[in-house]
Image (cartoon, rainbow, N blue to C red; front, side, top):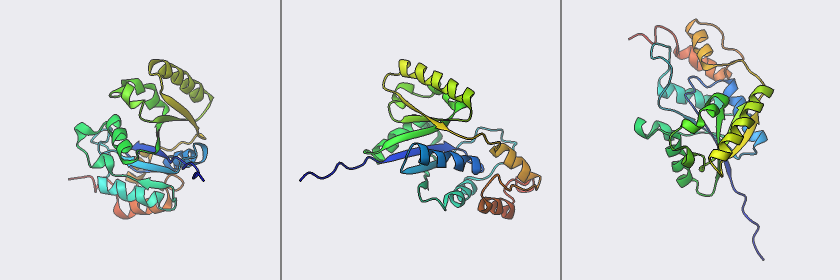
Length: 215
């Protein structure tokens, strides 16, 4: 008697600076789990941050600690330090996805990105190879985002045959890490913006306070 075909694992990759992780990030992960039926959502913080050095920021270990606190209650959410362990010269999405393919050869990889990133996807390093390595799921919040994402999907599918895209429909939310860092620096409440455990960590360790970031 033939054994039943083994179900192929679906792993969503969610990258970002996560400085700090917030409820909007968690909403995206929950949507990926519910809508795309992934087995795991892997949070992959980047080593480099792309905002001004003068802005309040946390250390890598703080970002990892806050992320771990935020996802602890969700068994399908995981943390990966893959991009934290490589040299900046190796820190490209195409290289990350290639490493993940070697690590999970039988899994279907789904890369989560926002509308802004989707606009510039063809300018990323080695786009042809990149788009062959995963399905790209674009988080959209309204009809305008959805229409534009579908338009870009069509463009990329013609330019890069075999590329795969999905929509990840989100409710609009007004949360950003920049706003949270500003509020924390001013000593204001973060209620509703980050998980309670993350808020306690930020306040207890004065993560974004001007005093902590003065050397």
